[in-house]
Amino acid sequence: MLRPFGRVGALNDSSGRYEMLSMIGPSIYHANEPMLVLFGGGKSGPNNTWDAYYSPSADGVTAGGVVRHVEQAGDVNGDGWPDLLLSDDRWYLFDHGIAMVIAGGPEIPTDDTTLSVRAIATAEHRRALHIWPNPMRDKLQIVWRGDLRRLPRRFTIHNALGELV
Image 1 (cartoon, helix red, strand yellow):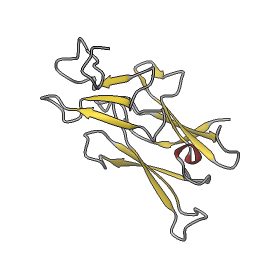
Image 2: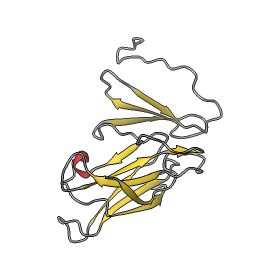
Image 3: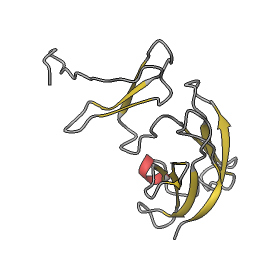
């Protein structure tokens, strides 16, 4: 069962008007750890489906309570989007605890975190377009900031040989 868990800020809203709703509950990956689930939203309230989640064991970290505390961290990585700090001062493997930074963005990637993400700049924003996974398989995700003056209208995808896909 999910329960509300702290303020996380507007991690995926470039206007900064709509905070994400954070909920915490049992992980679907490991029985002994909590999982943080984030819901975006707008004028009508939170979305019905989650936009992002964090579970330590899904990220390759030893299962445990990394999400004991959640704090808005400002723009930690310098991409113009607010980020989130998860921490646990009682992390059982270290005397001083553990902390994880969850990067905000136009769409918070929820797929495999071991895949790389490419950010493409425009004249307005250093990291305007995000493309993942790289390398792609049968599906390519492309997202862009909603506050661009000129939104993308057409994409062409080419393979490594320069051929139009």
